[in-house]
Amino acid sequence: MTHARLVLVAPLALVGALGGCVSPAIPETQPAAGVPLAPNYFAQSRPPSGIDDVWWRGFESEDLDQLVAKALERNQSLEAARQRLLAARAFVVADESDFFPDVDLQAAIDGSIDDGGSFSDAAGLSLGGIWQIDINGRLSAELAAALAEADSAAYFVADQRRVLAAGVVSQYIEFKRTSARLILLDQSADLQRQTLEIVTLRFEAGLSSNLDVRRAAADLARTLAQRGPLLLARTRAANALSVLVGDPPAPTPEQGEDVKVPRYTSGPDTGVPADLLRRRPDLLIAEANVARAAAQVGIERADLAPSFALQGLLSVGSGGIADLFESALVTLGGVLDLPVIDGGRRRAEVTAAERNLDGALADYRQTLLGSLSEVESAFVAIEAAQDRLVELDRAVTESEAAFEQSNALYREGLATLFDVLDVQRQLISSREAVIDARSSLAQAYVDLFAAVGAPTIA
Image (cartoon, rainbow, N blue to C red; front, top):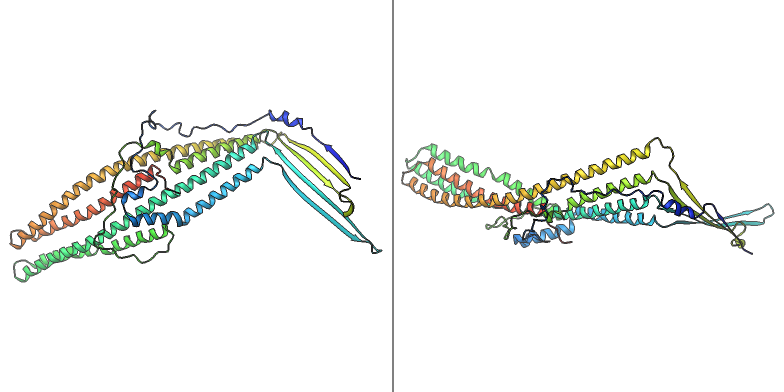
């Protein structure tokens, strides 16, 4: 015959009575409050054209498209961020489980042989559990903190994608810039060799001094001396690209004679893309950090309030295995924890959490201000680079004409070598400046897309 007994230590009605005692709320926050923006700052903005999920395609380079796609797939820093996101989501599931009972099953079997050789056994099963009732809001606050952490991890993945895409394009631009500069260096050296040959022939004919030969040779040497730094800069850009796309560094491929710095075909309209700033991942990370800090305040405040948990135990068997289910004992109890004296620890922890929240709010506002600054600077950089490029193109045209004229006059003895070399230096410098200006303009577009948080497709 089976016997069962029920022992109730605390009435269940106590749960309802305590439910309305204290419910510490997570503090509400307005992260953007306190940032001195115009009242209609966000409302008046309009998205610039050319901002989409694959903005780098505006450079119209298949090689660049493949590099970015490869980086988004294989970059190890991005993969690490993805794994941390999965871990954060697992912690959310763990915190959600705290709202349900935690039940464990234990089994014990003991056997012995007495002096007479008889065997005796004893067996027992126990099913025990505890159910934490969220009367003080701690479990809810812990879940909110875990959700904020998961949001932060997801935004960090997006931010890594944003930074990674911009990094690949920037290194690609630098690789093309240094490659173009190397080609220009060879062209400039050829031009200076021609000048040196002319000066040498005139010297041998007694029409110029050895000083002119030395000046022309010195200019050629200064130009050739730039090859080493340019080769190093190109190699560094190539190696940086390899690392970003998840490949080991490899020998830098040779470039053809028609290397050009990539040009963005259709730039965004000028304006304040504040709406786009709202999706900037690092700003969303800062916002998630504020939410997490606010949840932590709720956790600490909950420790000032009572906590209540239900405990239960079902045990069967105390004799042999055959009699395992002959008796059963069920106990159900409640544990009430009332904070009384702790030397001020709990309130100090609340104060610390509140100050951390204030710090997270300050971090968010600083991130917002920095984002606004980056956007405004990027627009100005685009306009400045465009204007500079127009003037430099004009300078190259004029320098080419001036060089041809001065070279012809020098052959006829109507101009000095100093005039020829001076115009030649201006021509070479202007051509170099054009390449650098095109690179700066391309980089300014990259900076703009990164500043407004232009997304990348997953």
